[in-house]
Image (tube, rainbow, N blue to C red; front, top):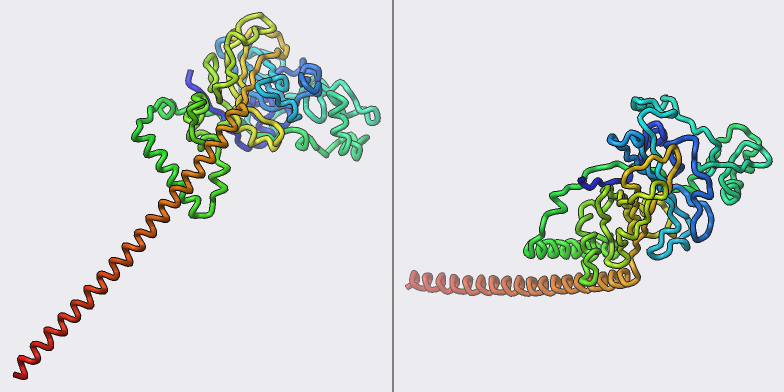
Length: 406
């Protein structure tokens, strides 16, 4: 199967509702199955024991498995940056939901893309803040539901101004949840990935990179070079996976997701690689789980949350898409981070790059000085030649005149 790449793209919210089976980032989940919505306790962070919030969902239906014709994978993450522990994924939860073509919620024909088309409503009370199951109710107005006391507390700052008013128009979810984007899928260019770079081509590429950086220096844009993306960092001998990662995403740095079901993850480092035999079996059927997709570090740039961090998040799901009979089944994910050694090496690489740029700049300055000297010398020679020529012509004219007078 060819790798598919996901990119974040702004989209109108109504197009990201469940009736259109979206793949998306942020805001509230667009639930697939509408009666067995997960509870807060299904989504608790292993470290702080607070509910995780919605990160993204991927729609990946199967035409070959009747009970998984519609199929979505949901990913949730704890907002607390302290829970992002190196190469541990206890702050992330993954759920699988699937339905047959014939089901109680959706017609067997695609919905018309119109804002006026009928919305498919969830059949249970949802948390006003995060969109998960909301069994708790505001004791004062009896109208707003919450999944936990934490989310009720987070919402209270605005809700207290509207408490008791049936039609709430204030929505502060964007202060707690992540910004919303559609995930647009494209095929990866296999020719680009498989192309072998010759030493000569590599030398030309490195020279061009240096020349581009020198142009940045001359234009006063050195900060753009220092804040370069992963792809612009030089490959280190110590970490071949990091080098492969950079080379693979070169030209596609904006990808937020890589989908490669039954394939292998694109690891970001030699350190902390997961042994496939260590992936837990499906908790529903005890069958094998295989890799399905990975969330890329670029997604962090879309979240407007500077506490979270990861290298990649690799998601593994039941190989057979076992029948979960309307439930939201937990799946497995593994978070791989750049280690301190990787980060330190990257800093060293960047310092070396800066030194190379400065050296190149000095070389250019020296060459310019030589060119200036050569230019000055040439001008002096030309001037001297003109003077000699003029003197010669003057002598010639004088000689000829003396001949006439004779």
